[in-house]
Length: 113
Image (tube, rainbow, N blue to C red):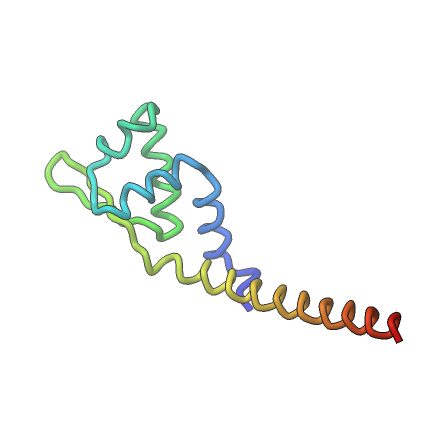
């Protein structure tokens, strides 16, 4: 089970911020220079760079530099850890809810007989 996976914590920390999520949404369309990513946020470049650093530390993006232009690209496979954990949680809760449903139905049948 991955519940104490430090990579998972970093990924969820990175995804917790709406600015970082909007950056990832933009990068899902394709790579972009940092200045383009910063423009819609209304934030100063150093602040955007800190957001990008968090995303990069979590492995969600990769950056490259060509001359004076720094570009970013999403690393979609990095979300596999989070997806796996969420799938595990879904399975656990669906199983629990199925058992609860069975128990309630049993109580209802016993009450009607």
